[in-house]
Image 1 (cartoon, rainbow, N blue to C red):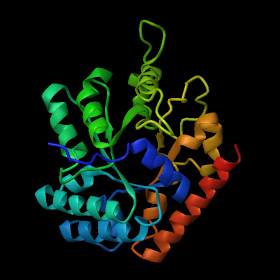
Image 2: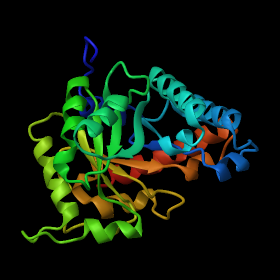
Image 3: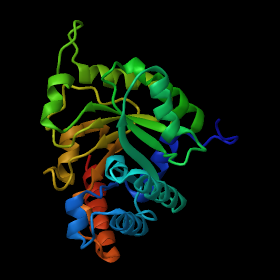
Image 4: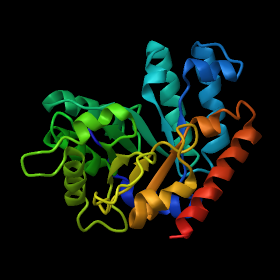
Length: 284
């Protein structure tokens, strides 16, 4: 069952948020070592304190918050309840929420995953969801359809920053195009004619270096992990993404989160990254 008043398409809402707040996406990644750095126990109470602090510090100033679902799910139903609250509070404060769950399956199972995150009245409804297309791009159809119905979006794994990804994403098809390029082409078709920005984006690592052989002009957002702790900097973005850099949503997690639990320090770190990213994008 969907809501009676579908949201404005995710791409349009994201474009406005990026223009108003800058394109920074901050991850909410409460893994055990980071909880320890904050002086928190690796338990539900620590999880709740961590996520509440990040939302308080970030949700009224960054364009996107990206909770990593796995770090909440590991605590079972109580962890998922913390995630539900974090998503609702982040969205209420004006941030767009991209749920980093990387779901991928077929048929009714894919539809059920989509309903968990993309149905407007679902407890975990998010503005967008990360998905894996490696059961075939067509397997994502239930998620694509539900996202369209509810004004949500998807970020499809295309050219990821992990070294292992290349054995799949760089594999060459019979038509001579590799798998990553094929995913980008599917997304470009999905977003054709959408203004000011399509709702179906790609995950493309900021650490990948020269991507000039790929057509990143998909008329959709490019979620770019790798800024900060993984080694990429804001200054790398124009070189990696070239003309598509205005549609890049750079994701920073540890580079910001390690400044917690102090709210002011978290905000200052996010502001520094946001300013650096704005300057890099403006230079193109």
